[in-house]
Length: 229
Image (cartoon, rainbow, N blue to C red; front, side, top):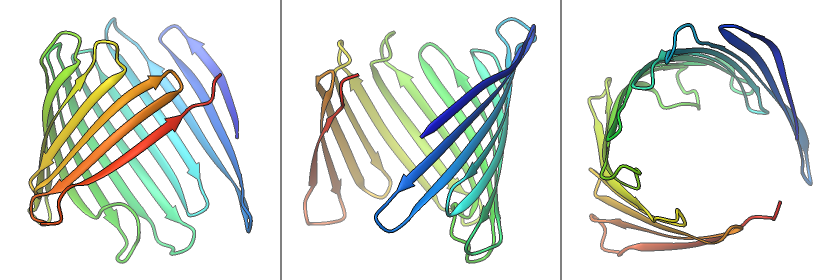
């Protein structure tokens, strides 16, 4: 993997940056190379106000993706838009995704509303079809934001079907232990316990329970070892 980062221009009110990522994967039967390029333009015209425009091109083996995003806002509120064009190599056709949203950030809560418009060719394998409206709210119980509770609601504007999820999280004082849980309107309860045994070792215990099934809960155990730098 090769990463090329180049600061093209930096001026009084912003900067222009170019990043390229070259990946080469070697397998037993095949090998291929992918290239991703990102152009980032940041502007700051007034104190505490930022604007950014990003162009991203990804060239994987299955589908080429081109996206452009723009955002503007303050530390308390931000507006953003993103558009993406996908060109599959195999099936032909294309798909487009448009996102627009607003996010409000306060010391005790975060809230956001996002609208996604997705247009795909009939039979195309890609992103979820339809138009989606998503709203989320997270409330923090303490100043350190280690205890939180939130709700997320998603509505398909074409079918009228929606999904809602409530959940919460707790993080220990030393940031080595965390507990997360969530429950959605389908009757699925998920919980996760994560503990950093060492700086290079993390243990995770997960559980999932479907209220509508009589099979009982399912559990998972994972141990992640990170190499020392």
